[in-house]
Image (cartoon, rainbow, N blue to C red):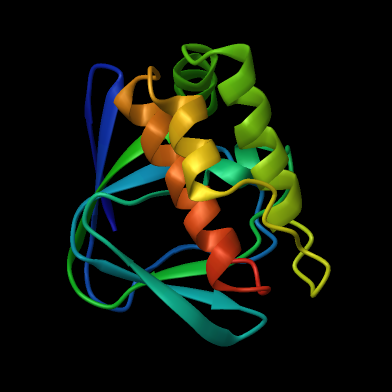
Length: 155
């Protein structure tokens, strides 16, 4: 894995089979996939994959928890890392309602069991975030998607 810094931005280049972080690690960054594919592994089992444009790793930062999954590259992958400070700035750029929705969705997803609840419908989310910036929209919809897809948390 190779990191290339450009001012406040850091690009992460991964080769196939490399591990970005392990389940249980301290979370200090979120990431956006520029190109490539990553596997999501929870408790030693592959539970999903992520592709171009997806943002991940935000839950560890938002909830101040350790990583809930191991992330490995299944092909050469390019990422942009997002520091805790930059993620906080991005999320704080949203309305208080949008911030609360993101926190509620993260808390529900973090339960990692059959008692997870999908707290909002797609129509409710669309209405709440309709005037938010693109980052807030993307993060909110991705967390909702992960919550809907599985009772096993996918980070």
